[in-house]
Amino acid sequence: MKAHVKLLFASILISTGALAQGPYAPAAGQPGSTAIHRDSSVVQAWASQCTVERGYMDIADPGLGYASLGTDSDGIGYADGAVVSLGDSGIAVLQFPFPIYDGPGPDLAVFENSFSDSFLELAKVFVSSDGVNYVEFPCHSLIPDTAEIGGFGSSDPTYLNNLAGKYRAQYGVPFDLAELSDSTDVNIMNITHVMLIDAVGTIDPNYATVDTAGNKIIDPYPTPFNSSGFDLDGIAFLHAPITALDEKDMPEITVYPNPVHDHLFISGDLKYSEMSSVKIYSSTGHLMRSLEPESVSSGLDLSNIDSGVYSLVIETKTDVFTRSFVKQ
Picture (cartoon, rainbow, N blue to C red):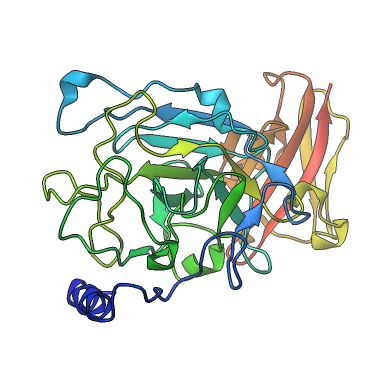
């Protein structure tokens, strides 16, 4: 939504007593809410790796120092209320134990620790298929940007769309990878990284964060505390791990020997010319090798990889196929 549309929408709200709801889903527990509870049966896995680059407690006053609540490890696993605070414009990059993919309906849910339905500290969400090139989920904020809402101000979630932190603690904001299906910079069937960037909710154009329509994203500001900014509690994946998919997804390709000591071979009807990439991931989701398809025709040298369980991920222009193997 363009900025002039946002201003018109705000004017309508003011003229009607500012009691009307916005066009987006309401708070957790209300009819029409898209919030996903941390114990929902749709949750299948939690992020297992997290790296945080802290932002300042107050981006306009860097002398106060950086946010410091929590550690990187508080951003992984079950959303248990132990959080890591990003600070103003802070960044968190997370990975799952396997590449994640687009399935039916929403695919991810991001959890914050807000104590209410209206104290909403927000973050933008991006995904990547290589940890280098990221694509942003389209997001929108219709909260008027004519004045700061202050460090303990309130926001209406019906004015917010596709922004992490829209829901209170224990409830995740869902994101659907299908919204990025037209992007040429990411493969929605092979997502390896999820990135969150804290939204600096000020009206000051020198520091303000904007949504994908160019509108300022207004949230509590300033928050000059060690818990400044978005408080990451966890990210959940909402479908079965790709390594657990039925073998029929790649019925004519095998890897051997399995278990393997030094060299792993690929056989089957899928030609190397049809492959876009061949990658090996550890059981914790760490990318161990990224190989050109032609280079694996004579076997994959695994002599320098530690013993353990790994996933071989073969990507084509239209599909992503996975085989698990054991390195002895």
